[in-house]
Picture 1 (tube, rainbow, N blue to C red):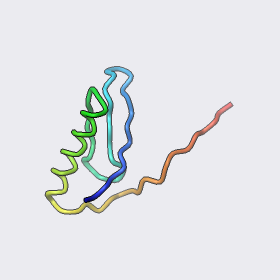
Picture 2: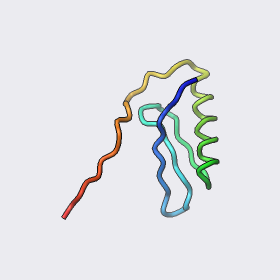
Picture 3: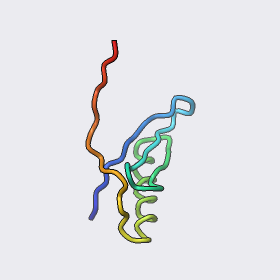
Picture 4: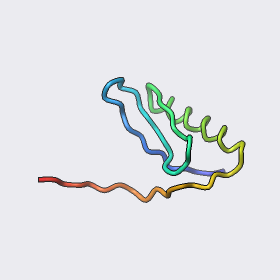
Length: 69
């Protein structure tokens, strides 16, 4: 079993959730609900893994708050 960290944003124009896995080329999708987004991400990752384990181009480290005056 493998685990990947996904970044989730909401599109202000459509209200859809958009998710992607940093460094995992092609691992991105969108959905109307968070549950649907998670399912879509699982499906796209499973499909991409059929070609073998990816070489990740980046490693998710975390987030930071940036304060601008």
